[in-house]
Image (cartoon, rainbow, N blue to C red):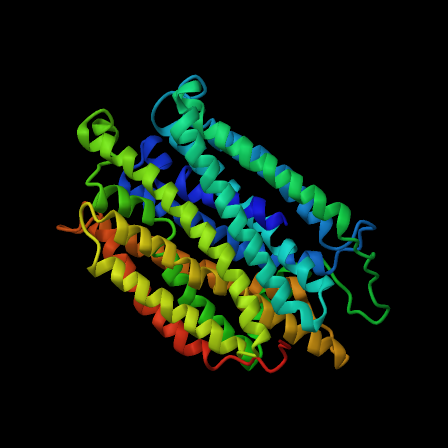
Length: 442
């Protein structure tokens, strides 16, 4: 259930608190695109270390729950600070405001990465080998609900409540609503999921301050052949997703609605079109979330038909590849229906990528435990996150460079990024066919 709140927060970051908001802080479109590097860089470092630390946590409250609680507190602090970063009463316009906003944006990403890894790991800890795939698909179901909540909150505030708050408080209202939702579901999880205290084995090797770092990043170099194939599939999948997720709102606002998010044009016709595009993107996101919820239930039905996980995963990624290619070649000015279908269609590969890789790793670990081998589930979940973070860095750099190119203004840079994403998803789909799913019980 915490995925409802986590996904709602990601949705808010992508739709309301991302590129558009950083442009409001005074960053150029190219600089705003580069701010998305913050997430993967912090995730690259944070996720595997948190996973490794939680694997060895000896708290009486359990291995994962202390990290989840700490991350929740951090989320509240950094999110509120970020939402306040563009208030003129706190900072004069210019560099101090820009710097504070960027630092809070980075710390917000750190907090989200802090909370994601132990939430994934606790599902793997408590589920049996036979329940791993179902458990992760249920997580996708709740993530779909979270997207629906996130887009819904943004839509309601943007359409019906925006005039009731000062302009510089709109993001604060959204963030407080989303974090309140996350807090409720984290509270339910912490009260329901009972972890037993982990006791360090008597024959365990001695540890020191460097152990979490060596354990986290050393796992990359100790990957099995199956994990290497999984890592490459993750890399190309998420390279595609990060060519889409941070930029689809800009794509709709600029290419489909013909708007301009430049602050100098805020009160012009182009500025109004840009605002209309933002509202439309949020509405399309609601439809995407609904499809994600329904599709997660369909995946469970396909499992009952004994369809191999690798085949389902590959088919979903191929569907996403076709969707992104269509987004490049079949969508133009005023093509609102095709644009909606592109956003909605991406629910299929996103659902699969958020479930199957983690389920396969969880199943491998449970099989290893049955064979008497020691496993570090948290470190491995964090390691998978590395191969989500690396492609985000490449995607952010590439799209930022493309926005500077002559002739790629007005949403064309984002459109070409979709084509790159489509090719990347096709590569991932082929790789998925070679994954080892023999340990997964349907």
